[in-house]
Length: 299
Ligand SMILES: *[C@@H]1O[C@H](CO)[C@@H](O)[C@H](O)[C@H]1NC(C)=O
Ligand SMILES: *[C@@H]1O[C@H](CO)[C@@H](O)[C@H](O)[C@H]1NC(C)=O
Image (spheres, rainbow, N blue to C red):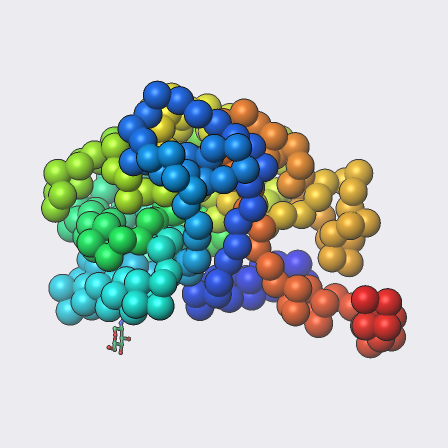
């Protein structure tokens, strides 16, 4: 059941539902003022508050990598900016030869033409005044994700079997770390600006909706690694927002996914928290008819 719901949520995200962010931590540094940072409980650029209104569009990298569909990327940014949107969340990953237009074909091996697609996405976003939040891997098997990383290690003789080995196996973690540094250090072939210096990038996201059976926090060790390469852009985890064991009664229907919204976001390198809101899905799928009734009358 949980797996089916996970896929459904992913599907919904892929359909470009609106999302919202809230701020939980503040940080400051001597970075270029044109890169958005937290300032108290605001996002700020050049000392002025930045307010956001945005959308998800997972498909941009793939569309941009094909000359016949690249105009869809431009069209989406143009349309979004015309209705006042200023941030898009999209993927800086597509892992595995089995995926359509893979960015990372095998560990550390990249398709340069697809990478140029990502360059185009960022460049077009900048032209339309839209920030991008770039996700670095998927939790799910769509577009490779955690399962593909584990599979790669298995094919290379590692004793790994479960997707959760992503968080613990040194070889798998090495692959992910390498992907992080390849993307973050990339110099955009269109604008000439290194991603790590590009004010169009609003933030990095460690993983889309990380989950595990026994969350060790290993993914969060990657937060420090990413910040050691790019200390200026903000970083968020990609969490859905579920509380851990001690507050599970506050989760929809007591659901637990091996994450803890509070402790995972308190990691010093994490600049802001995220939630993914699918209340209609959680309640329709998990609450019995009579408890829906209780819910409605108690709301
Ligand atoms: C691009 O846009 C056209 C309509 O203009 C649509 O039919 C097509 O599915 C889109 N392709 C992608 C990859 O988004
Ligand atoms: C592989 O890992 C499993 C689970 O950790 C362990 O039980 C098994 O002994 C390991 N096999 C080898 C060949 O190391």
